[in-house]
Length: 344
Image 1 (cartoon, rainbow, N blue to C red):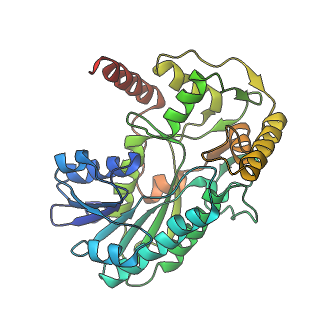
Image 2: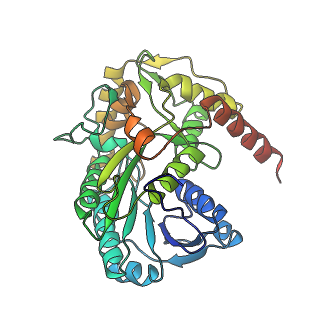
Image 3: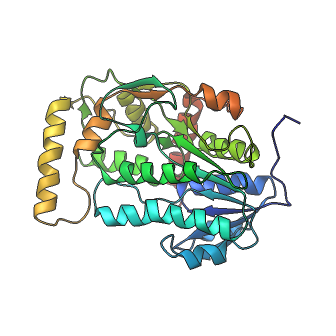
């Protein structure tokens, strides 16, 4: 047995917020493969959870009583749920991402739970500029262009600050999760491409990190099994990715091809995309238009800059090793589209 590792077994009960979501469900499946008892917590019902023997509890992250009651009987928490997106009221992001995380921390303490694995995001340190090979020492920026990264950063800080002699916390920063079952990134790419509203932003010289869904879920399990009060990983944050940065629009085109679509060829400059994003944000705000604008300043910056990270800390301290290559992941993604196409 590896030093500083406590394997998850059938004796454990894991509490997973957002267990019906893309990453949450992948984590839940990985836990069930280890025969760990699982409670999933979210506002909606998910039949797929019941099929694999997961107890589902309905509730709101913004309701402390819901969380405290639902966590009863569990001994480890995976806080995955969050409000994502690039538009909407700041209050909604603040309440879900920050206050919801504070409520999770408080509920852990109320139930005597000693381990909390938090799903953060590399966007918490994104300052609008190229980030190439940076590690966890890079500071938080002074300004954020969107509510999501700002409130996720606030939540990550709260999780790390909560680490104590009797309560161990760790934050993982997976970047651009993709794979079969994705209900966020890939559907956005496909819908915009099919509507003729997707263009290459910039010159496609910006490399980015991504992470395949099963790899991201496995990283959470590895972190959980190395997390306990006083452990080397407690109170830390880790970038996790494939460790294989690629040109962003090569990845996007590979996803389009896997889905049976044509790859992108037309492009616009990064400066023009940023300006369009600014104008659309103002229009959406002034006229109170619901939903997200086709472009925002934050998305324009994300799509035109390099952001890949040094994952040596995760490799060394979590024993993290991405075993599924991008090519293999794309193959599995294409197969999932083919299966979906023939299903009634």
